[in-house]
Image: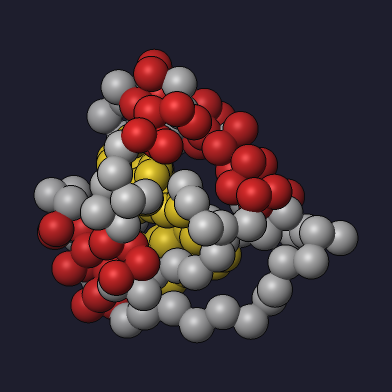
Length: 132
């Protein structure tokens, strides 16, 4: 057990769609998956396990990775350049995900459907395989 918490509140659908618009990520009406990874002030085990799986995640065409931090320095140090160059990887270098209350200390998976309804699930080290 890594001591990860299990009770986390998340934002509304509107916050998530506004966040995507701020990052200029299409919120078109179709099923999509977004994984938001906080790159600082987050559970290091949860973050590390999620980052290690990014190459696998990118094999799915409707899955997007959003790397969130204050600035690009930590992101550039932590993530391989080949991954950063992928069109499904987006940089939130103003940590808007935190401002929009889309995450706390853990990476989070967001699912959108054709009605732009938003569902989410946090990713913790303790339950990583089940979360994914």
